[in-house]
Structure formats: C-alpha cells, structure tokens
Length: 88
Length: 101
Image (cartoon, rainbow over all chains, first blue to last red; front, side):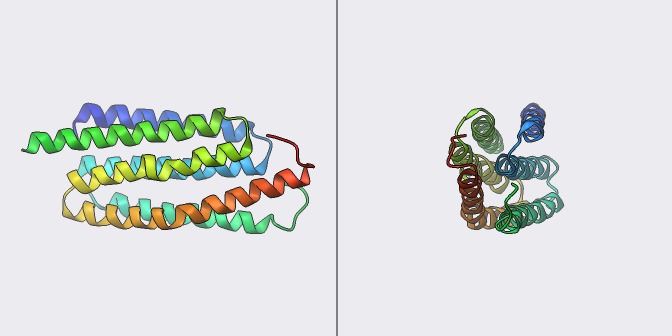
C-alpha cells in the first residue's frame, strides 16, 4: 500500500469515528447508541488492519481479533441485559 | 509485479473505506431505526472484509493468516449481533407504542 493511500484512508476512518461518536452522543435511544457502538468497533478493526498492512506487523491484527470479540460480546450482552427492563 | 500488487492493495483499501463510509452515513442519516440497523449490518461485508482482503493480498504470511482469522470470526458473528440489535430495536419500538423512528 502506498503511503498516500494509508494516510488518506486513516484520516478518513478517524473522521468516520468522530461522526459516529457525535451521533451516539446525541442519540436518545439505547438502540441507536448500540448501533453506533457496533459500527465504531468495526471502523477501528479496519484501521488496525490498515496499520498491520503498512507496518507488516501481525500483532495489530491480534488486537483487532480481541476488539471483534469484545464488540460481539458487548452487543449481544447489552441486548440480553435490557430485555426485561422498561426504561430503555 | 510488486507494483501491480501494491495497486491491488490500494484499490481494496479504498473500496473498503468507501463501503464503511456508506454504512456510517446510513447509520447517521437514515430516519427509521430498522433502516439504521440494516445500514450498519452491511459494514462487515462491504467494508471490513475488503480491508482484510487487502491485508491478505499485501501483508505477508503472518498478517494474512491473522487477517483470515479475524475475517472469519467477523463473518460468523456479524449476523448474530445484527439479530441482537434488531431485537433491541423492536423491543424499544414496542415499549413506545409502535411509533416510528
């Protein structure tokens, strides 16, 4: 990957994260916030993969694997947690 | 040959970033809550999978193996978490008396 592409893609992904954080902060409903959090984890996984390609260092993808696992557990776990509650 | 491979990696990365952009714009801009979840669920296949494919093509053996692992895990778990999000959205809507958004 060329350096220019790496820098542009990285800045773009961080812009997407900022957009999602802004949306999650403004959203009132838990469902909307959970959708945004799930998407943030995915964008970070893509960014870690970019760094792993650029530096040819596989350790970053180990971090990405843990992040994928945590994102999954977070989404499913909170979905289960609020199942019986009235105030979402 | 190495130049062609570099260009392929560039194209895959840019395609993946474009796919993630589509998903994020869908999450932020679409009105309906189910439409938001639908847009978010495309992020894995349209965005992250392409970037991980770029890692498989252009990252060397160790990076490629781990990218395959991460991609397989994401493709397995994405439908489950999307299902959880849809159920959360449905619960939310039912408790609000079936109103939109």
